[in-house]
Image (cartoon, rainbow, N blue to C red; front, side, top):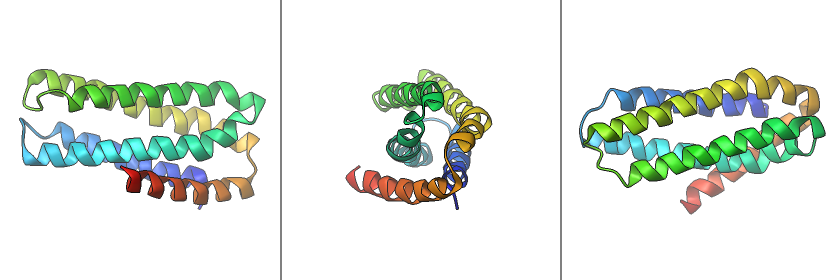
Length: 147
């Protein structure tokens, strides 16, 4: 498995968790569980992705703009997560803010898959892409353990 396939697995999980969360209502145990799972998934994914995939992409002059843009989007998502964690989950304001997070996450993963990955495949050779998947896996496990 290469880094692209591995990241897409996480992207699909994030899309699924967002869709499931949108079906919940109020300050329910299900909403709390799904949101906690999504937060851990998004944060550990972003950190590991930055330390593996984006670190490799930013080494290439032609990859720097896309890498920086994606890392900035990670920060925006992290900020939204912090805001959501401080809000009352049972309010309409919470679900509106969550919908913004969901839209941002879906936009981000779509952009990675449609624009960043095709560029990266031109800049990062296949062997390194496979090695990056292993590095990503190690970093993500370390991030989850630290959380």
